[in-house]
Amino acid sequence: GAVVSQHPSWVICKSGTSVKIECRSLDFQATTMFWYRQFPKQSLMLMATSNEGSKATYEQGVEKDKFLINHASLTLSTLTVTSAHPEDSSFYICSGGRDEQYFGPGTRLTVT
Amino acid sequence: SQQGEEDPQALSIQEGENATMNCSYKTSINNLQWYRQNSGRGLVHLILIRSNEREKHSGRLRVTLDTSKKSSSLLITASRAADTASYFCATDANNAGNMLTFGGGTRLMVKP
Image (tube, rainbow over all chains, first blue to last red; front, side):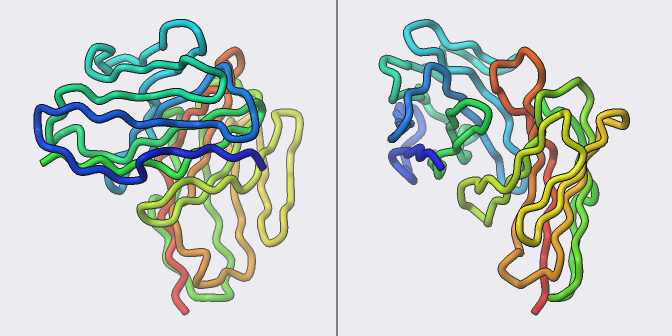
C-alpha cells in the first residue's frame, strides 16, 4: 500500500512555543490530506481537511488560528500548533489517499 | 465528530476464541473501513467494504455490512495474543471527499 510519513514521531515542547508537524505522501500525490487528533484511550477526531493550493477546512470547535495548516505541494502538508498549551498534548495523525486512506504513523506531542 | 458507536468498548478473550466487534453509523456511506491500532502507534488498515458489498474476508478477518441497519461487524477467528489492540471502524460518507469518520473503538485483549 501507499506510504505516508510524519515527522517528528514525537516532540516535547514548552508551553507557549510553536511546533510544526510534517505529513508526506511518499509514493502518491495527495490533493487532500486529513489531520486527526487522538487523546489517550479515545478515538480519532478529525481536526481539518488540508487542501493543496487552498485554505484548509476546519471542523467545528477547532481553532484555525491555533492549528495552522499549509498544503504547499501535492506531497506535503504541515500542521503547526501555535502557542501550545498542555491541553494540546495529544497524538496527531495525518492521512491521504483515494478510496483507501493511508495513515501516517502519528506524532506524539507533549507540552510541558 | 464521531459517526457512530462501537460495541463492545472493551473485550477480553482467550487465545483461540473468536472476537466479534460491532459498529453502527448514522449517515449513508460509500464504504466502511476497519483499522487496528496498537497502543500508542499508528493505524493499520485491515479491510474496506463498499456499500454494495455485504461480506468480505481477509485471512482470519470477516467483515459484514448491513446498510439497512447502518451497521457492520468485524469477526476475528482463532484469535492470537498478537491481535491485542484497539479496533476502529471508519466510514467514508457520500460527498465527504474521502474524509473518514471514526467510531469510538473496541479495545481487544487476547490472553495467552
